[in-house]
Length: 549
Image 1: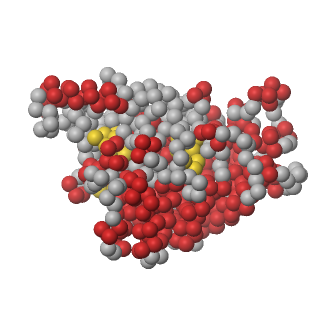
Image 2: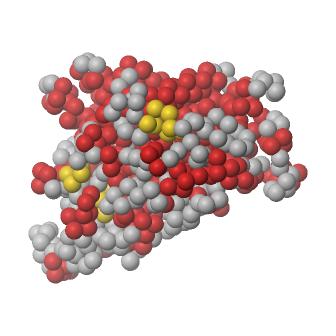
Image 3: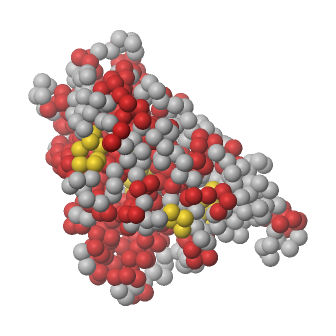
């Protein structure tokens, strides 16, 4: 990592300054801040930390040289998880930002692609910044305070977050491989040049480091004091709840079921489930009661046509959405009970107005829906949907389109927050962990609060054995977390492939989806593993051609 990571430090102090407090900007020019200034106090360290926060959603070229405007980091990486597994389905042939190429598995399988390269460098950028804070604080050069403990807790949490992301994308899944021997990713602890790292550590070694970092984070957060911000900005700061949430994810992915269950319970404390109105409000703000952690996207730093909602929300006024409304798997939507209010955000009977639709059925001339026997009724339905959801004239509609993800100001390009962790996920993790420990009754009880909150007729007795309940739990995962990026890690953990043709079909077009229409399960198909950037292999003296996935 020697040659590539040295460039990341060039912007190490530029990022915090972009997000620092006004008084600090007045005292210190953006091109003159030194390492000593950045680490001189808890206040200045908070500026470095704020830079990591902003780096989660800024365009990648503002985070490190060699980045690209086509990727705004987590705006892209979050929905990518559902784009790869066909949960978020493309209805037409649009490839802005290579979003179609990702869907077709033509990005992460290429070692020179932007997707493979920028995800790698963004995560190591987080690690480098976290190392800077951890190494300085742990050196003991500053007096320990409650504020400093909070910064340390956030830094350890960030490092664990980045390593978990790296090992889950660039290595074989823990539960389907041989963690003690499978190659993971390089470990990096340095915060100073030349940034040399070890060769690829094993998956087990990376998982051990993640556990150590999260335990250190949880310890540091105890008796700590946050920066004192409120509202949506508060949840952009990492917390002990977020650390427990990451611990729950980590444990679930490796089969440490008891730790997963316990950590999930701790993570969701203080984050009550959403009401029906809140759940249907669009998932566009950290202010939702369930949100444990998310990026508070600031309007002046918006990414416009690089945002999460540009890629995934049918209300966004951008060509990726107008020409290619995103739909949900009709097998999932059709299975939602009428008593479950989550069904309301999917429109299976939306008219298909797109004459360029991949299924070739766009326009009234191809309409087969008996709800619209005349063109006037077809057009009236179109006008009604656009009025209800705030769409503009250029927005196309398609059967099974979704409105779970909605902008606060639909029909615009306004920015919205990016949610990373909700308490609903923690109920799902606890239920799955209990089931994996053969505790069917406890698994049902763990799921009950979430399931009953969403479906007024939910009855645990409908699932009399572990097999039927596991199928239902997978359904709950897919429905509750739709569009929030969990498809990729869920498929790997469950060792499930992708099959758009099975059980009547998902609604995806085989012509459009090509090789990704049917994909063998991860244990039998190494294409689930992202390619390491070729630039990293060329530059890192500890990696060679034999290290490529």
